[in-house]
Image 1 (cartoon, rainbow, N blue to C red):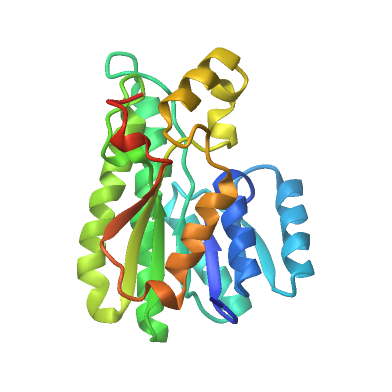
Image 2: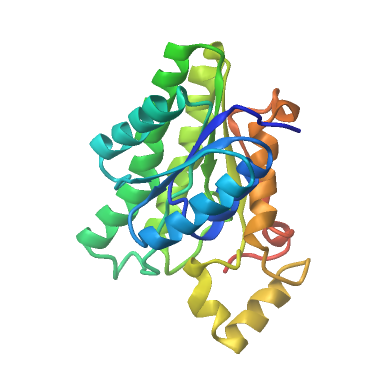
Length: 255
C-alpha cells in the first residue's frame, strides 16, 4: 500500500488518534496537514517526525468548530501542497454528562467540535476534490458509541450517531464523484480522552475485562485502519463504518 504524493488533512492531528493517523499516513508516503488548536510545540515535533520520513508536513492552527477555519485548513493545504486527497475528520471531545446534567454550553461545544466540524469538513473537502478531479477519501473517526448507548455521556453519543448518518448519506451523495466516505469506529483507546480511566486501576481493570481482547487499543492500531481505507485496497468501501473495538460491541450491553 502506498499513498505516495497524496495530500492528507487530519483534524485534531497533534495528539491521540490524530497524531497516530498523521504518522501512519506519512509512513505510507502521504504529505500531511496537521490541524491543531493547542500545544503548538507538539505540532512542531510531529512535523519534524514526518519530515524525517521524507514527506512534507504543515501545521495549521484552526478551530474546526468554525467553518471559516475549516476553509482556511483546506485552502492552506491547496496553496502549500497543491491538492487534497484525504480528509480525516478526527477532532473530538466529550463532557461525560447525562441528559439531566448537560448544559447548553456543553452541548454546543461537543456537537460543534465533533459533528459540525465533520459535516463542514466533509463538505469543503468534497468541493475541493470535485474541483481538482480524481475522487478522494473522507474518513470520519467516530466511535462504537455511534451505535452503542453510553449513559452519562449523552451529547458525545449524539454527536457520534450524527457522524454515522453523515458518513452514510454523504457516501451516497458523493459516490458519483468517486469520493468515498467511511467511518472508523474505535472502541476504548489509550489516548488522553480516556486518561481518567487509565489512571484508575479499578476502572481500567473493569474496562479490560469487558473487552474480549482484554485490553485497550493503541492509537496506532486505529491509524493502520485509517491508512488502509485511504489506500487503493479500500476502493470499494463507502457509506459505512469499520469498527475496531476488540469485540466489545458484541460482548457487552454497554459501558
